[in-house]
Length: 192
Ligand code: MN
Image (cartoon, rainbow, N blue to C red; front, side, top):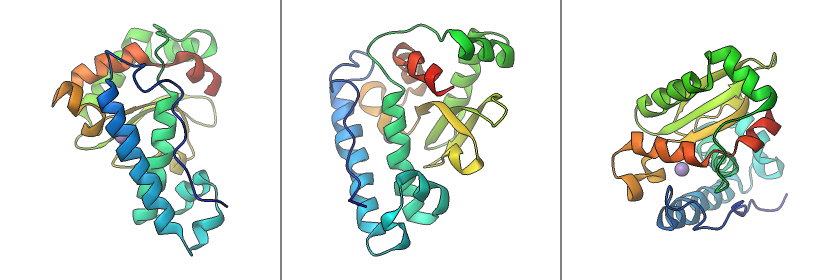
């Protein structure tokens, strides 16, 4: 397999303003995400992982190869969760499943926000489904990815400080407010 490359963003680099700035994306996408891609390519050279897909590496590796592979996968996924085309809420089957599991969309948002803000240190807050299509919210530290637990990601919020520090400094709750303005519910529904 050829080397991994940084996937293109599904929107222009300034398209998420004012919620997430171009400056943040220049660093978060152009520097942090790019570095995970570069480091992964270096680490897998000459190893059994060289010919695997990114998902296969995430599911089968440990240590620094896992950390960098999962950070590439997680960021690819995170960008796909965001859109400048504001959508207030999901509809269809995902909306029904959220209501069934969390009582209401507002309750879901409150719970997801609480778990994102409350995640200690760096990590990712995920909305996932299991093999029975049952939804849940899971916190993962550092590069953690729910694929390793057999769960299917529906939505993610990157809560590493590099996701918001330039725009909001230490105020992760303010970043969550911006995140809700940007969620691509249409793509989340397709995943569900
Ligand atoms: Mn990040």
